[in-house]
Length: 268
Image 1 (tube, rainbow, N blue to C red):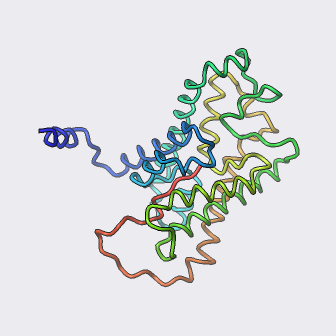
Image 2 (tube, rainbow, N blue to C red):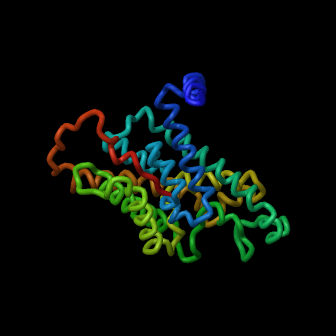
Image 3 (spheres, helix red, strand yellow):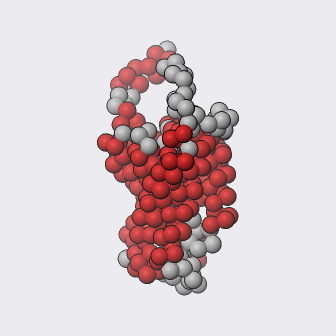
């Protein structure tokens, strides 16, 4: 009886279009990433996020989605859907974090939500540059860091490589992101994800921090948006020219085999 009820519910409410399912997967994946109580650099190691990503084939990063479009692994028509879902999921996750820690924020700030200074709290939600960092250097930082991320993701998930053990791809990518954070996090905290940065920044702009979130750091806000997108494209191009172009085509697999591993990914 229970199985029959579940079947009827799926028939009645279950989504039929793949695009709609993928939209929800991207939204939920980055929502969990934002809300996760562990640092962003380790979010892909979180068991809940790992399950969401592995079962939903989510990218959770516009730069990764762009790289997949460039390599022909994601149809161009799906790219805007993925990006919109990722930004909305990040914004919704920021709302949840704000509600979760509202009392703590009010107690710490006394209601004065500052973007810069000793009591700044906007950097809880989005990245801001270190005092020594110029706009140009910040842009280069994001191109290099995101390019490295995409290169590693492609190497880990490419079926033509040895790759990671089945089911371990999210963990390996999480460790990659942690390594990038340790080695490249000094300048601005390695955003490497436009949705992860701009979605929460938009939330802080309307939640009390104001438009200073866009003016701070010499109008820093566009760097962690444009830089990672360029880095994603550069990383995809380098991987194609240096690795993918020279690999033999894999033998045709049975249609019932496991889905392409490149889809089983998540990043901050």
